[in-house]
Image (tube, rainbow, N blue to C red; front, side, top):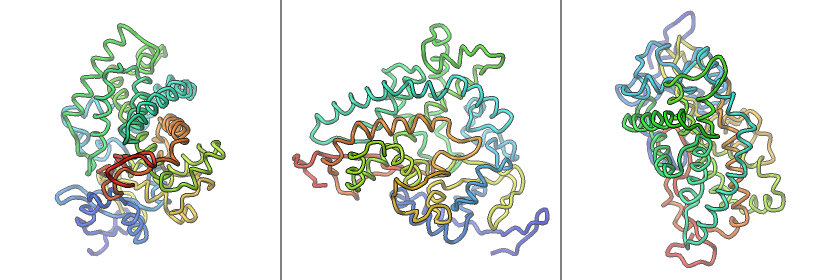
Length: 422
């Protein structure tokens, strides 16, 4: 380790680049079980430097106190240009200008304005009004699913439910839902902050540009039409509409899929929890909150950049360095939650970071929890009778550093014929 230097009177510990750590964070073993390696990192310290060879510094925060502080620190910004980085650093040269006009890529005062404009039509009342449609979609998916000898709770149910919901919210034609489900899955598979599938960004951008033109001519009762016809003194311009619609689509789909999938996989392995929910379904919302803490679908926060040197934990993060908060590790920090590796729906989960914290708290949090609540209520009668249709080791997990969750959950009814016992 190098000798410490000073910056603004603060001692800066110069950590060596841990390329083995970066490789470990990209491995299939980590995707299936991030808790053990992240727990080891958390015990070693709150902040860790990890990046691939030749990359700019990336810092991973694994403790709750430092993670929450980072999410609230206005010196850690979303706009890379504020940290002295080029405008095209993220997400890609061809679309960086358009895709920098959403909530996730901006800081105050731009973020404040954008959030206000989106929140105006995207109200809790509008989200709650989706409940009957979500319930009907869940029933339809369940009825189709159980007609098969073996079915997948992710691809046949969770993915279809969240896709139908966000497409209904935005006013996306039903015929395009399968396409958007594929796009959502591709979006969250990056393993290094700043990586981009530029063809994907271009395809989504062009799609929404065309859809916005149609909605201007033929408005409907959906969120996109509401954003277009906003009659306030300030409104979203064309680029902002594309960026915001694309962001809502992507972030409204994949996290919901992982939340439902994680909850179902967890309950399949805990029949006592299923029994408790059957005896008292009012426990479902608390169970979902504990899933968000215990098996958070967001593995890390979206990337932030140091706009100036920032002392965090026992290191100094230099201006321009990238910062990720491990939400999974922070939510299992024993300094914040007692017995964090135990799943206890009765616990007080206040303060969990499953949806982030501060001004960038997920705007779709209520929608994701509503989808998960409906999903559990609809599948609860089935859960005691379901068994895995493949060995546990054959299950696939979401790759990358952004999302955590199971990708496939094939099951069969207990007693049904199956080539592979669960």
